[in-house]
Image (cartoon, rainbow, N blue to C red):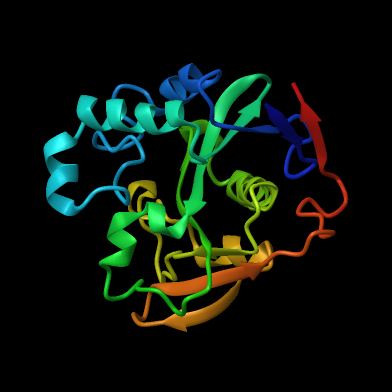
Length: 211
C-alpha cells in the first residue's frame, strides 16, 4: 500500500488508497449512515432508482465488492493514525450518473479521471483538509496512469451545509491548479487538471512509501 505524506495543512496528515486492508477505517469514518443517507460512495455509480433502492446496507456491500475487486476508488486521510477524510477518484466511466447528466456530460472524448466526492469528519472541517485530500487524490490518479483529472465542484454565493457540497467547492480546486473548461449551469463548473509525469502534487513535499 502506498502512503502519501503531506506537509499541508498538518504535517502529521497521511493519505492512503482505500484497499481491503483499510476498509475498516472507511467504515469508522463513514459511520452507520455511510457518510450521508446510506450513500457509501455509490451515488455516482448507480442510476437514481438503483441508488434509492440500495440506500444503506446494499450500497455498503456494493462498494465493498468494488474495493475487493481492486478497482481504484479513492484516498483516505489520517491524522494521528485515525481516519479523518475521504476523497473518491476513479475513471469517469465508472460513474454511471455522470454519463447521464445534462450539466456534467463529457466535454470531449479525452480519457479523464473524476473526483466525485469528499467526506471530512466533523471536527476536521474548515481546516484545509479538502485541499490536501485533493492533492493526494490527484497523485493517486497519476500513479494509476491518469493524464487528466476532472471535477464538478459547487460555485456557491452562500454557505450550505456540508451534506450539500460533497462534490467540493470551487476554491479548493483552484488552489490545486484545476482550470474551468466548461459551465452549463451557473453553479456547476467542470474543472480539469492536466498531469505531467514529473510534477509534484505536494509542492515538493510528497513522500511515497510501499508497505
